[in-house]
Length: 426
Image 1 (tube, helix red, strand yellow):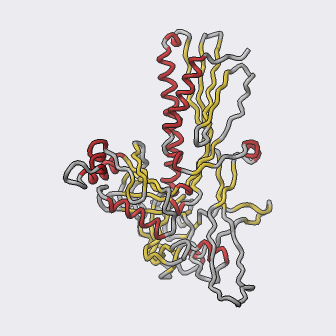
Image 2 (cartoon, rainbow, N blue to C red; image 1 turned 90 degrees about the vertical axis):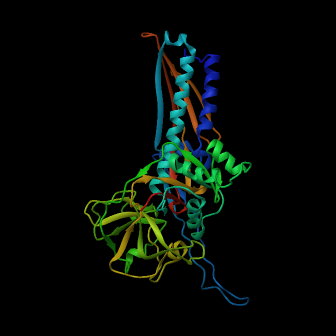
Image 3 (tube, rainbow, N blue to C red; image 1 turned 180 degrees about the horizontal axis):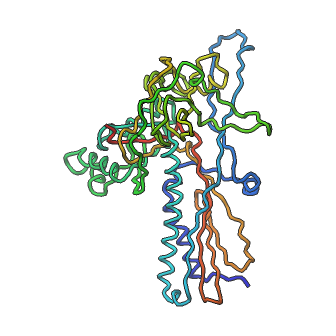
């Protein structure tokens, strides 16, 4: 007969789920896509999720025919994988169980670790793949720092709602310190909260959060590097599918492999701009007057190529409909040796900011048999993340084994709607 949970354990599991849900700070501020678990099992836990469409308009007048103006629409998509399988296992003897308090403490520790795993996975994805880069030469300290994140999003047409900013503890405290002095007399709610509780809250359109585990970025070690911007490298052509030996396959259009003069010292995560390549508003296609920011995703062997994000879609030479729709740069100056300018000039904490629809979590589900001699309990949080608790009793050793599990995936569907804020970049 299968083990059964006592009432005390059921109550404890309910408390664990409640605390687990409360701890999922980041997952509440990204979009959630619930998948069909049978289909996911048949596709190696990978599903292609669509990126936002960008349409083009034309000018016409009543009576004029637009018969030759119909354009093809290209739907871009990205692969999303349920690739994180996290568990916290522990065991207790029948002697240990005499102190029920210990069991509760272990469950509390387990839920904290699993919630942290989900939050860290989201933060890592944003920190590694966000392409909107805001370097600030000074330490964190005032409203203007966050307003730069607002500006780069606005200029490129990122929706102005559901924006979030995660700051490292020191950078968050620096901003709170400024707010605490915003009013020289107490009674100002914003200043009082900053002074008394080190609270920042909403700033420049971003709901802010403090991270105690923020990632760090090293100073760029790449030397003087150039890239050709007078040819096909600035005319990446977005495509929904590609034909190979095996037939049509989907294409991940978030990345592009480019040739550079030298990639020695360059590492994944480095941020840069390119002389003469300006960002455009994704809807109007007008230049922002600011250099487009890019991230290094990987550095292939050979020393002369980089995989970067986003791709450089300049639409400069007989552009296709897809290039017109997804154009993201204005090639102001063409050059065979355009300089690459590294933005992470000093090591610092990575502060991440994002629009909710750019990041997505994919909850998974374990198909655990309920009649295999192990007691199983499962529940789902508001975000769709499932938590499974199992218990097994070993009669030989009088030991009870527990495990707490969760299965999920995280994807950055649109890297141009998320980015990083770096301070002390001299």
